[in-house]
Amino acid sequence: MRLGPFDTSEIKVRQGGSGRAAGGLGCGTIVIALIAAVVFGVDPSQTLQMLEGIQQQQSQIGPTSTQTNVTADDLCNASAYANEACAALASLNRTWAPVFARNNLRFEQPELVLYPSGPVATRGCGNASSAAGPFYCPADMGIYLDTTFFDQLARMSGARISGSQGNFARLYVIGHEYGHHIQNITGINQQLRAAQRANPQAANRMQVAMELQADCLAGVWAGKNRDLLEAGDLEAGMMAASSIGDDTLSQGSGRAINPENFTHGSSQQRMEALRRGLESANMAECNVYIQAI
Image (cartoon, rainbow, N blue to C red; front, side):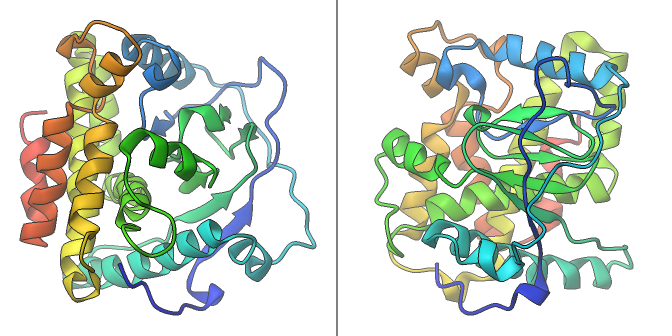
């Protein structure tokens, strides 16, 4: 996908600070991870229980420590992956802001938080580890990204994601987290959390619906920029979506495939959601995933 040039004035980006010691996990909102922790040998149901526990805690986390002399230009040019992520964020902002304006909705940009491998302290969602993959924190509207995840994604999906060829595998990841931001600023995220608290038995099913809608919204972004897509982009995106389906992750870790424990959807569901958004380029098409909530 040809993202083109961008100016750092178009985006919000900062350097993430290190996470605090164990015991600092406390917030009133839930961290939404892209990939289930089953990649690293943790059952998805345990991940959801952990996140719900975080949601119930109310301790306050102060601002993260950052290096004040690091500029947005420094961060966006620290590596090819970082530059690509910043360019993607600029494109996503340009794409979604007019959609909100046409519908008389207030639009707010998310913030891209780039941080080194290891733990990171968010501004409202407690501590997280880069092992969980990229994630979105509703409390500070931050998309948290350890760019070394993309090397892991390449190994998982087998996609050629080095350089520009097939880069949509990476961009799909960022578009998915941006989809969670859309859910947050439209109130969908808050409605889901309330529904999960009211019906805990259906919490996993509802979480899957949210994740599939975010996949679809990533596809909508690509569909609205179809002229920027290149040969191989769709295939790379599909390979990435397939590689992070709950069934594929469970199978890869030697665990039994149990749809009741899914938190992100099967590989087939994730591919279909991405394709739906891309082919329709219509945000309303993605509502199908949450209509039953």
